[in-house]
Amino acid sequence: MFAGSLVAIVTPMRADGAIDFEAWTRLLEFHVAKGTDGIVVGGTTGESATLRDAELRELLLSACQLLQGQMTVIAGAGTSSTAATVERVAWLSELPIDALLLVTPAYNRPPQEGLYQHFAAAAAAARKPLLLYNVPARTAIDMQPATVARLAQVPGIVGLKEAVAETDRVRELVASCPAGFAVLSGDDATALAAVAAGARGVISVTANVAPRAMSQMLAAALRGDAGRAAELDASLRALHRELFVETNPIPVKWLLAHMGLIGAGIRLPLTPLAAEHSAGLLAAARAAGLLA
Image: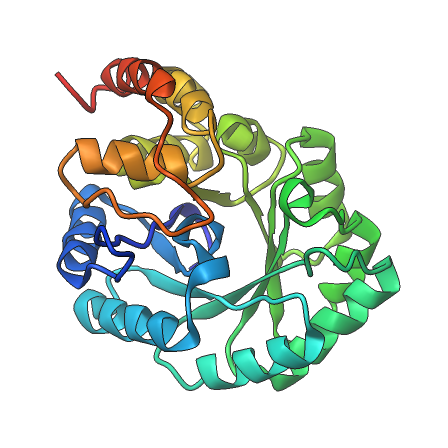
């Protein structure tokens, strides 16, 4: 269930910031057709910081109804408050989703023991499997492998999205956690190397625009076809880079809009892509075969 190419899917919005559910359906159908293994709804790329609970609920219910088990559905559930996170995982667990993704608490910078207790409390309240998410560049706290290894023993905690782009980190995590614990890359540019180091897949930004290539690349890597995986990854290398020329999801939403899959809406405090970045993004999309 937690392997291959999972997309950290964007939340399509209209010009006024309202969620565009017509475009949402279009995106979900796009990923079904292109072989994506799963979606994370309401994660960082989905502008989780500005989504209201009612909006997240509606997005998830819509996805579950449309997908009907065709791919894994994971809900972004983490907050910086343990009490709020416990409440959130409780009501999210009532929905027909497959799992919850909990990011480390941002801004308050808890110690490692605080991280352990935060996630253990969430796991005790949840009735769905939990995936941890470590992304120090966003949260200003780095959950260490020793802490992850402790949490991997907590019932209900089944995996980790690791955005620290170091293969040694991935090897340490795989070695220190139980065999059934799913380590997933959270960095597109190093996802192939992460799989070689023992990761089971990636939760991807690039898969928003290149789902077929990401799915095929991860499938090749997981079956041990290193040559084919490297060939596919090479075609995506510029895209991995250019999708982060501004804060995610600004570039990926711009490119999806250029591809006609969504409108140009994005919520403040994020703003539309600066004009000077468009040429590089278009060139990367052409190199990946997304545009003529």
